[in-house]
Image (cartoon, rainbow, N blue to C red):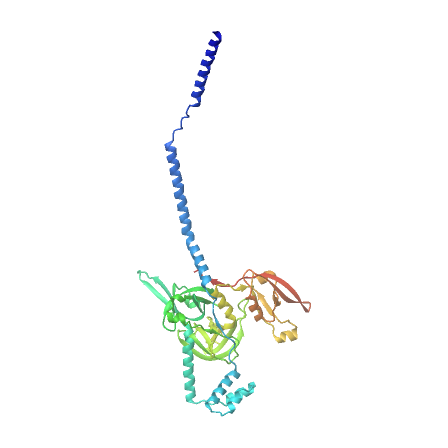
Length: 466
């Protein structure tokens, strides 16, 4: 009995413990109540941050969009833009060639019989040429034909010349808007199937708010300044080919760039505005040719004519072979005789024209030099090369150690035998290139070779932002 009682008590105690454990296991954890205020505050904060971020992103895109668009536009244009195209021909026609042409024409006309054709094929000396020219006789009919031919020639050459009108406007004291305009002559020198490029004198166009370009056909469109050369005072103007008429765009009248190496006595005509007014003409010849030493790293030649012009003369010199040989210098005081027209030689300007049209700055070292003459070489022993007259202050040449009296005989691995070689070879380098120059310097009655390293800078061509 007692054992059974103990057993029952154990069973009862076991059931109570099981029930207690079951009650603990089945207990549910009460969920934490949601703080609606905190949730609303976090939601509003997230939305506010999203709005602020969106505003910042929009402002950033708005600021950078013009820059990115311009960069993308330039990239697209550069991919579709062909190389700038010039018409560059050889040297001027010689007296021998002129006489041969004349003889051939005489032979065709039968005026001189069969001997003219034979004479035309003979090599002639200068004395023989002068004798033959002296035997030519012209009558009134011949002179009339000459001037008619010259008139036709001028009309043909004038196709590559445009009239540039610089327009400015201001308001007077009663509020009336007044427009002012000045005109200059420009020359179509290059094109790249996107733009065509016109070279002109900067002085009449200074301060212009807009430029109107009138072609020889009468068509007028807008032009924009692309680059300015501080040294010569010339400006490059670009015109969108897409803005031209279909006929003009298909037949762009590019000027032919000739050579400066014309001898004294070469006949020329001045077109553009040699008398100060657009469309004026001057006939004459080159009566002097001399180098100007005003600009660094160039061998500019100044051509002086016997054509009388105005103080504000402008335009271009053409030979009678259809080539431009000079751009009339804006400052006519460069002439040794007041009133005579002078022009910068086109050969020395070609590198500047190319740089302004392509947007590629020229290379600058700051050397102002000249040529070594045969007399200096034979009598004084000066080696042939680019003779340094002086270097510009703080220029790469001065900082490297090149000084007056040095003769540059090599740039890099290219020999230099004249100042023209120096100018031409220098243009093959890029801005920022390290250029090694070998110079000959006189020391104790003999010349020794030294080497200097210079970092090329950009020349004084200022490019305008599109």
